[in-house]
Image 1 (cartoon, rainbow, N blue to C red):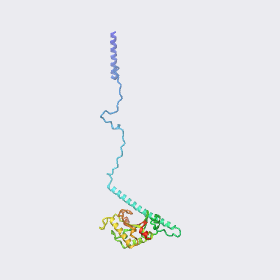
Image 2: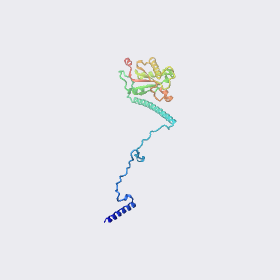
Image 3: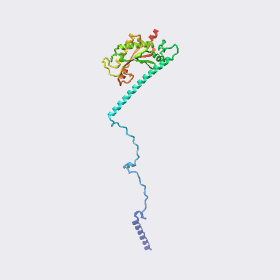
Amino acid sequence: MAASHRRHARCTLAVAALTAATFGCAANPFKKQQSLAPPSLDPPPGVAAPAHTLPQTSSSAAPPSYADVDGRQLEAALVRSRQESQVMHDEIAALQDQLASTSSQLAQTRAAGLPPGADKPPRASNDGGVPTTPVVMQSAMTQLKLPDLQPRFDGAVVRIDIPADRLFDHGTANLLPEGTATLTQVSNELERVYPGHFIGIEGHVDTEPLQNASWTSPHQLTAARSAAVFDFLTTRTTMHESQLFLVAHGANHPLVSNATSAGRTRNRRVELVVYPDRSAVDIAAK
């Protein structure tokens, strides 16, 4: 009986050895099988993950760089920009002139349609001291007989631009003979159409440097020119000093661009500005 048990044990060991030799240790029936954990894809601590496994983020576009732009190209672009700006200023000036001309033609058309007995537009005068209305101011402007000058209506006032080169020696406040004749003609027309109205004498120059050492600033030159016109109007015409006042603008209010010779010539001017109000001295005299 014991011998039978020993034979059975030897047979069992023989079968186990044969199985191990054939299938390896993993198939050993006597080895306890262990469960395998799923592999982890996370890198171990201290080790960076591969770049291709990281989430892709969109990067914003780099700002444009002008380091490679040729300086000559920038200079050419600046010149073109200035030229375009000058053209724009000239076009605006042309539109303003066209608007003034259209307003004048419209006033003349309205005057032509007045009823019988009113063949002329009313003069811009008011004996009661009440400011004349803009409609009357603009309508009366058509009566001004100034063939060499172009009055323009500006809001509620009438402006008469007189070229400074026509009034004064270049760079001075000395009136020319032609200038005194022009001022006499203008003052006669203003007293006829706008009797007793307040009139501003406004001096303007361009942006060219002053060549006369007598003036330290453009405002001094325009102030002297306005004063010369004031003195002439109050001593050589029927205008009263109570209805006149002076303004020196210097180069602060150009009509057009100073980039061209023609523009600078146009900006050198004296403006006689007629206001709707009348002088109290003139009203009392009436």
